[in-house]
Amino acid sequence: MTRIRKTLVALGLATALTLTACGGGGSSSSTGPAETGPDGKLPATTIKILAPSYSDSSKSDWEKIITKFNEKQPNVKVELQIEGWDDFSSKVQARIQARDFPDILNDNAFAGAASEGLLYPINEVMSPETLSSIEPALLKNGEGSDGTQWAAPDIASSRMLAYNTDLFQQAGIAEAPKTWAELEDAAKKISELGADTYGYGLPLGQEEAQVESSLWLWGAGGDWVQGDKLVANQPTAVEAFGEMKKLIDAGATQPNPGATNRQQAADLFNNGKLGMMLSHSGLLKVTRENFPQTKFAVAPIPSKGGDPVAFGVTDFIVAFKNEDANRKEATKQFLDLMYSDKLYETWYKGTGLLPVTQSMIEKGRAEDTANAEFYEALTYVKFLPVGNPKWDALQKALQGTAGTVANDSPEAVLTKVQAQLDAQG
Image 1 (cartoon, helix red, strand yellow):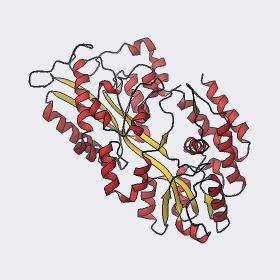
Image 2 (cartoon, helix red, strand yellow):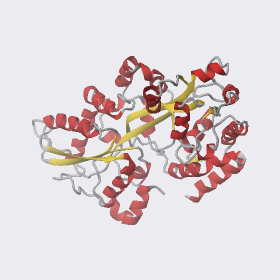
Image 3 (cartoon, rainbow, N blue to C red):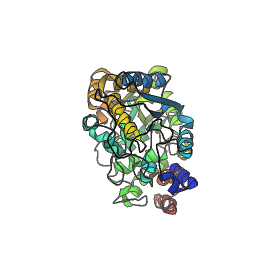
Image 4 (spheres, one colour):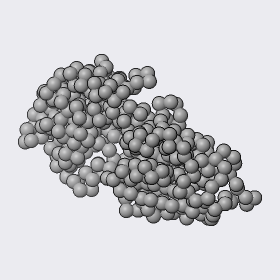
């Protein structure tokens, strides 16, 4: 059960779905057109934004958009609430419990709210031109399991194989591995260098197990999504977990992979003790700036057959139903303005992550050469099935159980994961 579903149960579903234009200032018809004047200006109303803090500039980056928006719509008050990521989920929950739904929410999940009927389909509050400006492979990540585009990505990141070029040279490895067999061979050779050096960082602890295991599953040609269901106990997953176990049993990973989180693997990599790990541009920026002695390169993630694999992450913009035509129109005009090139460039750069619009991706490829491979990967990344309301249960099961493959068979581990998924209904 998602956090949003839990909240709605507590409130009483019938009450929660009887949404009104609560807390948003003036009101208008819920079904008719907006009361736009001859000059194109909306009447006095208020829209509310709830967003996380990506950096020290997050508040001012949003305020630049608000200022520009108010030049066009001076009668619309925009209330902005910025909260830290650490406590962001509870802040969202508090707004829902208070029935103080933000008109615009910037978050990393949407399936629970969509399944409860709380959101507008995003194409009702963004123009076709704005939606078509977003890289299609990223836009699809905002599609629900019902086929509705509920969310629009606003920032992205991708993960690839980072490898220590000095350790590769010492171990006599000429190039980055493309297949599982090549990765296993390279990891063994690097671990054999000794001096507490490990071939492959396998973080199957609570933080990262769902990401790592998904990438190995995709590398085997599988997917958690089977028809309209999520399935953990499947042949390709057994194959993927079997390959991870081979690395563990061969001593080609860091100690205790089942208790290792991403940062712990990154610490080993930064200090020159790890040959390979799956990483993203933010982590490698730290390596580049704070650990210049560690020389590395980036390559596509190996797969069983050698086809490149990359993991994608997006955060999203969603719009809560407010049953007020003026606020809905104000929301649409605000979002269309936000994604315009000049304002969006300033906003996304403030997050420290990668853009989602095709024009900014193209510009980033030309100017941000340190992250060129990550930009390229945005065109073929795969995403976790965040649009499926059951993903929360599968993710939790993987986070708590995938690491036990160090001491158990892949079949037994996946049977336990499947049982936890099934127990959620």
